Amino acid sequence: MAMRYLRFYKEKSMYYQMQEGYLTLGEGDWQDNSVTMLAANHVPAKGANLVVTRESLPVGLSLADYLLNQKSTLARELPGFRILFEGPETIDGLPAHFLEFTWDNQGHAMHQMILMIVNNSRALNLTAT
Image (spheres, rainbow, N blue to C red):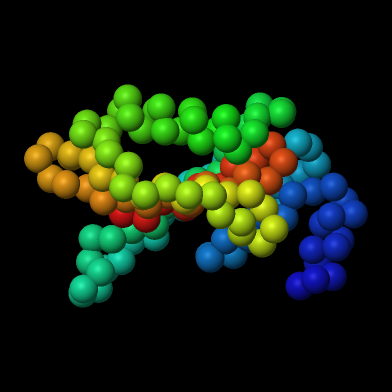
């Protein structure tokens, strides 16, 4: 598998792996802006899920600026948004931030946690509900 990866790398193609297999995308400026959702279908965790999102950030946008934008969006879009805990983290040497909050979803209390990791001009968000 490593040999294949090196071959794809030398060809300047994007090698994208997922649970079901992999894709080899032709030469070009491919960006992974995918969303992955994992849902628990077993007791006692039934209904819990983990959503992983990836996005490109404007050049020079810091984690602090990204965090302010994210919190502003959450406060604007989620009724009853209330932060329970937040704090800086470091994940594999990269700057990150943990945010735990609640909000009201049509009379149902929602409890979520987001781990935001920024690497250069890319953000990786892991959201647990």
